[in-house]
Image (cartoon, rainbow, N blue to C red; front, side, top):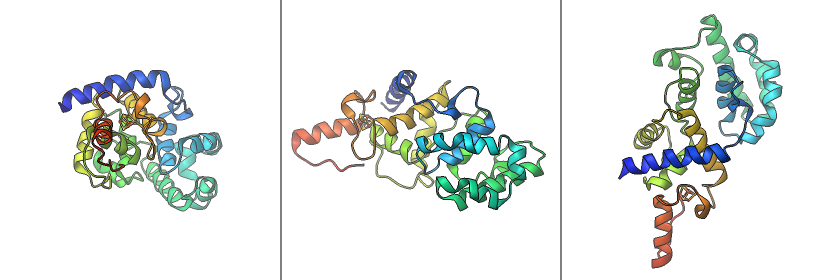
Length: 229
Ligand code: SF4
């Protein structure tokens, strides 16, 4: 049952993404690995549209790893300010720049090196492995978590960093050749269709098999309220 649901999700969402996926500069084929990875750090807890508006300004000032490794914390704080959480982000980018300087620009290639670098945190490490190391990894955040929890009826929400069952499920789901696109598809579905407060189940590509949708229909028939996820 789970396998069938996973295959349906993969097929439907890749097809849906080809027609409806959002275009962002970090998704453009011309974007470097550096731009893709740095963008993922900027995207944490920030709307993609906000980062898109800020993108050119950041990469004009820090176009490559070398430029980043020369930046001071104060300079990074200044340029991060419009995005919010600027002290936290500036410190992470600074650590990352210094780590790369120590390595003479060579990016980390193993889990141990990753843990030592500025990429603390599951999401950023997965983004790094997905874009830089071309491994199949999920960009698992609260948005991907919401789609997966609803579609698979996978229990209550926990912090994604501690939810091992959800992490295993996300790893299974993104096991496709077009792994990067499927990650983006899930995030776009979360932003455009499976939104937190009012999912548009009627027009969703996953609705024939989505268990949340089925529970909603049953709840309407029986009159038992469906707790929102
Ligand atoms: S059918 Fe509804 S709940 Fe299920 S994934 Fe689509 S929008 Fe989300």
